[in-house]
Length: 458
Ligand SMILES: Cc1cc2nc3c(=O)[nH]c(=O)nc-3n(C[C@H](O)[C@H](O)[C@H](O)COP(=O)(O)OP(=O)(O)OC[C@H]3O[C@@H](n4cnc5c(N)ncnc54)[C@H](O)[C@@H]3O)c2cc1C
Picture (cartoon, rainbow, N blue to C red):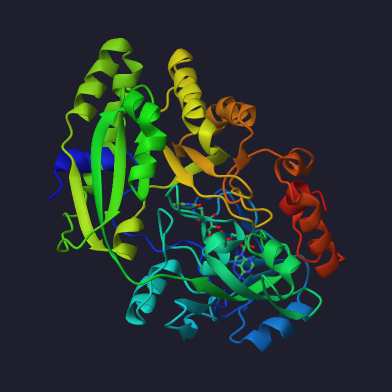
């Protein structure tokens, strides 16, 4: 059972509490009566648009037909959970919400074809009913599979890859009206590009996921001196399949979250007390502002928090409920540089008294061979910084982002960053090959909005 105090601390993490439906809904998206397309905005409120058309196909052939006639720029949309402006368009907003659920399931090979509009949340129980589970999940499960794939969305685990890595094949509808089925042996270049495409190659309609048998997971959360976590990060991550921690800026403790497979019975703690969230945030800000004595009190409060546990089927443990709105920047640095990079960030925050209390998330992810995945050709440590949605994130993010650059960081495509193609091209060994595929599939750039032109340089 989780204590109110632990609930309060957790509440300062990226939004714990009851689920809130995503703001950016799919569906037809037209105003009743006038028939005008509704405006769109993302979950964080950092991106919005007024599309001229909204397309919501109900079949793969309809995807192909609608793509051919849609007003450009055509931008696919999943659940709108990206912070960066990947989606906005004044042309056509293209939702795959109508294409969801399972296709062919192979019980022997443990693979399943899944329609790209399927949200990760409902996908867990669907797969479990067919004797399968995804090997890992991101921190939340509101995303659509197509949206998560397009940004190489990931969870944590030194031996576990991102969603882009867990794909054995996919079907892509292009802006020129082709339907391309690809895997490692058929249309391999398209496969390597489309496993993390930013939605720039066309619309992914179906994805063949490589799964495993369902499993039960136990998550243990406890407070640990942050120096210990930084010193021992590689060893702890090697010993625990799903390992991560949150560092609390200014404090000397971090929250370790260690998740293992188990046969133990299901045990889920009570919901966190949402009212504690606001109280903890205000208190923490006041303590940090009070200087050294205040930080000592914060340390004592955080350090004294009891540990907590959750045990359940994997998809209910690996993904969390996040309702607190926030802004986020995440970079992936080479795995071996992760602890040093986070240490420099924490030292900078302390030395410059940056008034931030939002915890910083640290995760490991195994390398893959998707061309634009943040984990392309190298094992990664991802570090995420956040700011509450109602506070200005820019001064903090602007100060920390150059530290990520020092460590060869690659920005998460779905999160806030300021890099453009000239810099990004130097970070990805297969950058030119991706651009060649993009150019071949969409020579007139019908899939590109202003942000994609900036980051891809197309
Ligand atoms: C609270 C919160 C927690 C998060 N936690 C994590 C985390 O733990 N790990 C992590 O890696 N990320 C995390 N993210 C980021 C998020 O997973 C990614 O930004 C993801 O891409 C969002 O998926 P979506 O379905 O909302 O897609 P959208 O944001 O709607 O779109 C993302 C991209 O996918 C493209 N796209 C959508 N559908 C298709 C399709 N069918 N074919 C081709 N392209 C398509 C869009 O054009 C766009 O480029 C988090 C975000 C939030 C808000």
